[in-house]
Image 1 (cartoon, rainbow, N blue to C red):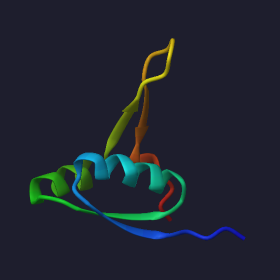
Image 2: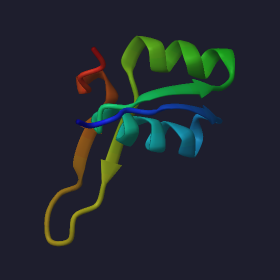
Image 3: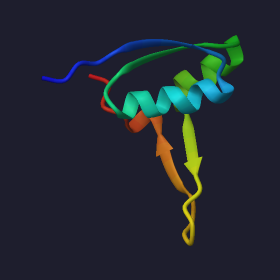
Image 4: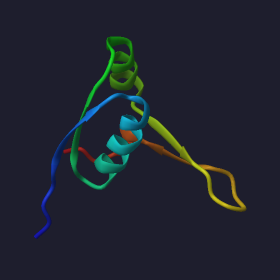
Length: 68
């Protein structure tokens, strides 16, 4: 049996990176950020680009996370 956590994160800069990773792992992540940032994230989701040695960066989109 696996457990999931509910996490509250302050700030969208690094918070969105961690929130996206947590969401992709099946946890609930809530960001506290400025209204314009919240609107953009709610509308488009967060996009995290990670460098991979010898390849193009990979892209992780929070909108693709299975949050249900």
